[in-house]
Length: 300
Image (tube, rainbow, N blue to C red; front, top):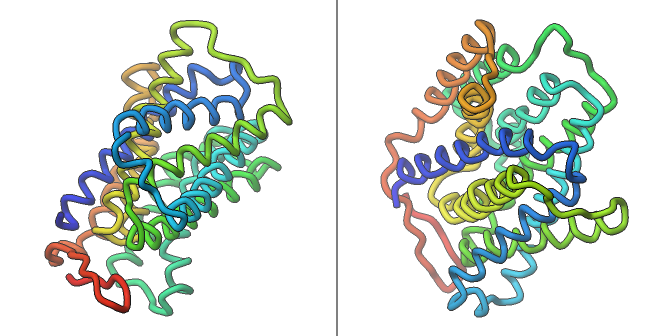
């Protein structure tokens, strides 16, 4: 698989996650937050286990350990995000959580000890400005919930980097499937401790939960580690910054929401930043993984 193909798949994952905002809008207020997280990841895990039943039971201890780590990070992302949304405005939360795209290259500086390319740097600046225009309204305020949203963005940046690292060392498909199971397990435990779990009561709520489970979780969080080994954490972060664009599009189509002139200008600037940042990768050929006695190394 080439890096270009991997990036297209990650873009489709971002599209699925953009659709999740419509599904969450349909369930919020009717089902407790931790219960939603437990259901979406639990159903996704069961479905993926049924589809890949011939492979999932051959998992080794190392894969389970890595899956528990990324599953815990995934759980942390959604728990902090749920609490953040409850205590701040939607526009503030959208901007703060989207800072993941900025945090990934910054964290990579400390990991690789290398400053990002000029294309990536320019992309960070443009994406930051685009996200600000896209999500910040007149009611922007740094409320108490903003700290939870920043924590969610930070955890998600770590999740992207750690997934990129683990996916090169174990079976990426099994890593993606079992992280769903662990995320659901952690959320279920929290739900029984902190909430009163309830099942969806209407058809609309079931459609929303199944959409979150199948489209946003089963497809999104399994395909992410599966193809991430063919691209870079920075590229992954930028492609996932398309999520608010897709969210706005689906909200307009299904919920009749309008971003306004400022939002559309921000969307265009954000897209330009994504394309500029990824232009540095277009010269790369197919990334292959070769196994040597010392471990797994990459060749471009």
